[in-house]
Image 1 (cartoon, rainbow, N blue to C red):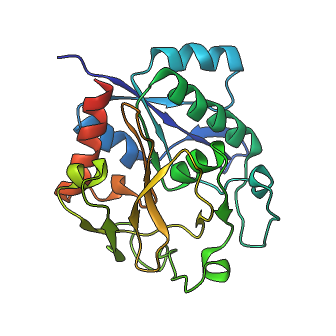
Image 2 (cartoon, one colour):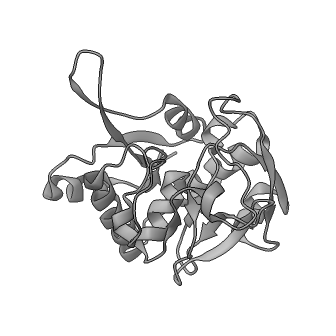
Length: 238
């Protein structure tokens, strides 16, 4: 059986020796592999022509978590809480979102990934939820709690693709972010909400598989609904 190639976006950092590195958390790789896909890391520092060649060979893309999207990309001012901004990664991933939409390439956004999708399509973000979202709850549970801690429930829109994948209209999730969707892109549809009504999932209508979630399902594959999310994505890519 064909194992689809699933590209995973990466971050850039510096190791303890001062060397530049490109990486991603192992749990993304494991989740894709367990679901039947072949994970491939996508360096955002690749030249544009080489990146286009790589993406053309992929069957699906995961827009992974990581540092904050540059507030300048959606017309907002930075705040002290905004961390690990990488405009080069932002620009690369914005273009990848648009390319995936134009070509019908299945994609899944996770945490930063859902934010990248929204900004790429004209939406905006809260730069720090707890300060800007009316009645906003704390969403940044790590490092005080483990990354797989089920922090709160998420209400899922009935009859949405996500509800069908997860097997119900409510799910327990972790919560590892301090930013979130403020103004939703008109191209997207909200399909899940946190208890404070922050958007927790979006879908792109009329696309083979265009979906983003604000939580980190790769840390929760011990739970059947989260395994089902990766399996559905890999099957769409297949």
